View 1 (cartoon, helix red, strand yellow):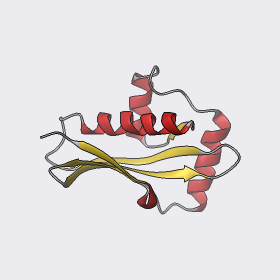
View 2 (cartoon, rainbow, N blue to C red):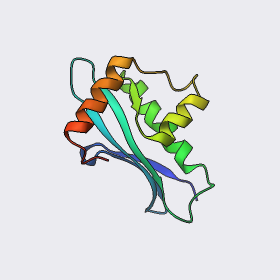
View 3 (tube, helix red, strand yellow):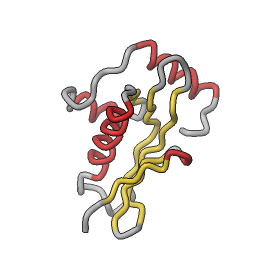
View 4 (tube, helix red, strand yellow):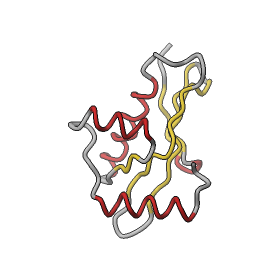
Amino acid sequence: MTVEIRDERAAGLLEARDGGQVVGRIAYVVLAGEVPALVAVHTVVEPGQEGRGIGGDLVRAFYGIAAAEGVPVVPLCPYAAAWAARHPDEAPEPPAELVAAAQKQLAEDPSPW
């Protein structure tokens, strides 16, 4: 089966679905401010679904959504950050001030963690 990636913006989730079942997700927030950004907070691949490339597909799709919207990504999630480091051609490094703003926003409201 083909994994479908779906952006559930209102819920702050980018979901990977296989046969209608969620097999992975990125929890994210939209950074409010002068320069908006998409902030990847947590990436999860469901047990038994590992090794299928779902995590990488999710992060790649997340960067694609951000690029289509003309906003940067702040990968605070360790998995997304590691993926970005391995794919610098697909994952531009965000400005340090955006990283600091995202960290501050999540410190004030850690519920997306």
